[in-house]
Image (cartoon, rainbow, N blue to C red; front, top):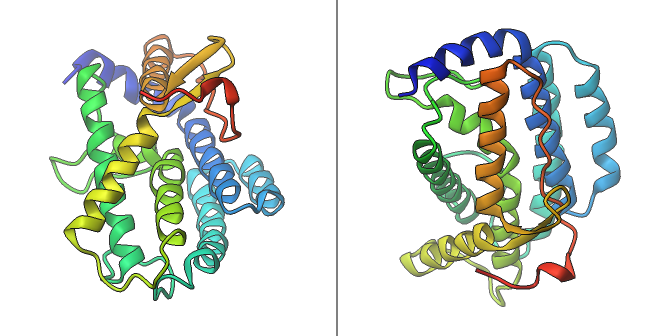
Length: 236
């Protein structure tokens, strides 16, 4: 544990915590409505979050946005799976795979945080449920969930020729494999002016946040664009 950074984290959360929550939730909503092709619908939710001054109020807006998003998501995959909607820990195909995907992503983010000695014991809007909890991981991965998990699953399911009735080991491995491909895919970084992988971008965002926390300055992240970049066709 980086004790000094943890101390700075507490101070930073008091001053900039609300804005960090706003940044992650807005980016999550932007990605959600982008992957289902409903960019126009996100405007209202983004404006509402920008207008709120408390974490609790922003979370309520995000919850309403999520209900709309999952309804559209259901329309996209409804012909290939039996699914009534997003409910964690439900044992239907889509929900089970989403749970698996989010668990994989949280472990992936945790490893990166360990690599750079970023403390995960405290969060900005997720709360610790036990002494071994890592709420920051769930804070940070909010913006990544739609890109690395939801979109990958959407593509896999919609490409199936038949209705997917069961989650077996083969399907899980196939899903995890394609999440890894997504994390290793290249995206153009406007500030660096060259292509980097999603994994490298995650490292950059975490290092930038660490610097912001240590210097008690505003966090101004640059998130990857989901638009196709022909210059980044190469893969890892």
